[in-house]
Length: 134
Image (spheres, rainbow, N blue to C red):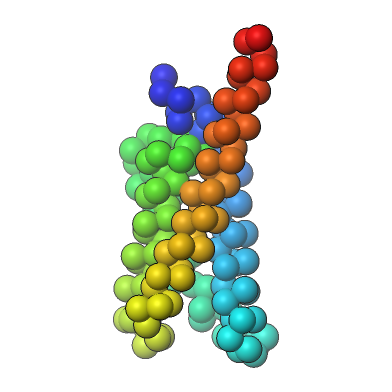
């Protein structure tokens, strides 16, 4: 079993889905706040839905690959890529703005969020494994 599979096996899939969802919500909240957009729920949901749909597609692909959703590779990369790519396509199709700088910021922030927590979890798991083996 690969290292990423062992790490992902330690967390049930719903944990990954919950963390990813929370982090996408945080991403949207930070973005709307930084642009002084109103705090109306409808505006928030309009901004949020394309990225959540993208994440959902990523979770489905990762599950179809039979990889743990908490694994960095490939699940974290798939969820991140789908969130960004499909999120942007859905924003365009729904008439929302997609500027190059927004795409870049989105890719970086969601990468740090969606891949980052998996990388930290993987590192913690490896460190615990070393300690128990010592």
